[in-house]
Image 1 (cartoon, rainbow, N blue to C red):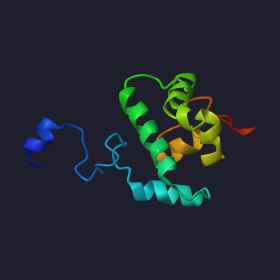
Image 2: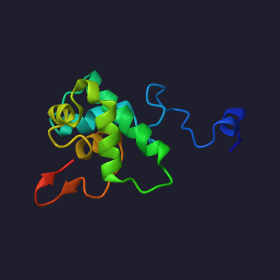
Image 3: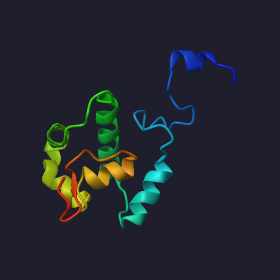
Length: 122
């Protein structure tokens, strides 16, 4: 397969990637997120997508590190503070903004975000 100049300038970037989601994991599409949300009984609005983008960006910036639940929760609290922080995010994602949001964003929720005995905790 031939390598293009774009491949050299932007290694690892998916050519079919949605420009609205520049930090999305490879192969993830907005449609995949919508399908997952529908399966979980959610209709996504602008604030839902804002969380998806925030999660994807956080994971992309920390791709070489193990994602720490507390650090992620604090980053989301800060990002959404003007709207009510984590309390507001729980109204958008009743399954947990980190656990449910990660599934919709095509990401693996960090350890501790879900407890199989009790459900989502983050």
